[in-house]
Image (tube, rainbow, N blue to C red; front, side, top):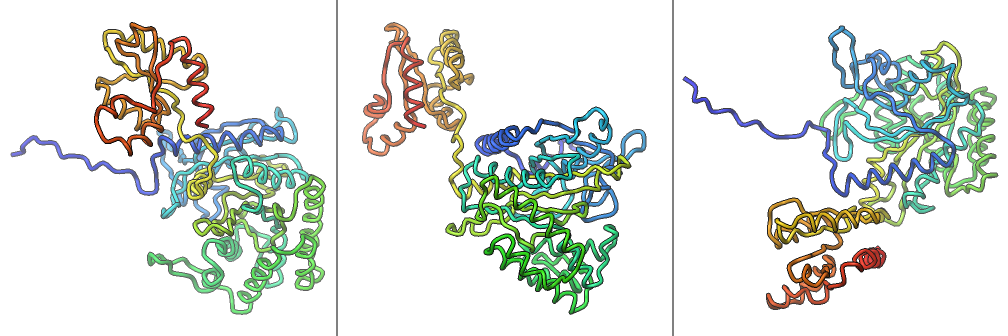
Length: 496
């Protein structure tokens, strides 16, 4: 016999996902808008593609797995087709370009922001859903398109408040690493070859895990702190030593000029065609960057940079935050990356479509700015809460809030049922700057009272009696109703 009592559901978020609200949401929104303005300034146009693609489509671009249900969240629809949440924004772009190829301008330049989903192990600061903002030039093999990507990285970071010297755009070519792998008899022609992909994934983890961990991943494998084991690439000692030496030399060259960085590696490769291709490519890109006024402390060649995605074919770039004088953020690492992918769209379209693009991890960038506490963004979006002192006269208060909004002042009228104390607590929790009070006295004298919440909080620390607190002395003023707009504007300007 059952009691009929319903079992209480356990309320919890899925592992690896997060809720974003209030200031955190506004920060991400404002970051995205700031970066989009930079992209727009370079002439890129917006595009929004579907958050769901056919699994077969997404599987073509997965960096770590050959099967479409690995690394992505997938489900089967009523027609028996497998669909997946997008893993990145590039797969959708490739599908869109392939479907609309004849009608699009060549080159086609687009930017896009949106959440992407990874069915991977989550951890601190590593989520299964996160926001990216991309920019791509499709249909251009001109080095200008790669140089532009690096320059947009700089401009985007500086536009959100990251100062020069606190970031570095690291530029490299996949041909450099391919030349090294060829030298060590590791297959590079077939990008689906298991050992090649394993080496690329291992080297790509250098910044996050360090040289010792990469050494293990290039060999037999590595067990992480949680006990999970990652199978290694299975290289021999000489191959591992050669790759580690290359990576160490690459790290050293970050302090040298662009051409010197390549000269230091030239003896290692001799007459390698891939190395020559990389040198030519990087020289062309560097020349454009230098002529455009960008310096070595903004964009520098670094041969240790390896983007893990197998579809990159040439230049690659990584946007790192360095903050050498900040212990919380010292060598924070990558907040974005990109590169040239000349073969990706060809897999769908059947014709060569050279392309290059960048992707900025907005969620990770927002986290860095929060740690830095220098986000240069608005602390809150709400300027004014108009208190409702008499429920029978609500139209008076709604009219005041409406007048404020017409003057581009962000205002709301309290819609709850609480008294004055509850309304003040509400305004404080909403991080409003001011409240507007219109009681019986104000209605009779055609005035309004403006209370500065931040100032009131400061003064309350030194108030000893209830009468003084109720008077609002020093934190509120009463003015003529027709002066309200001008006074609120003045106070907002003063507080900003």
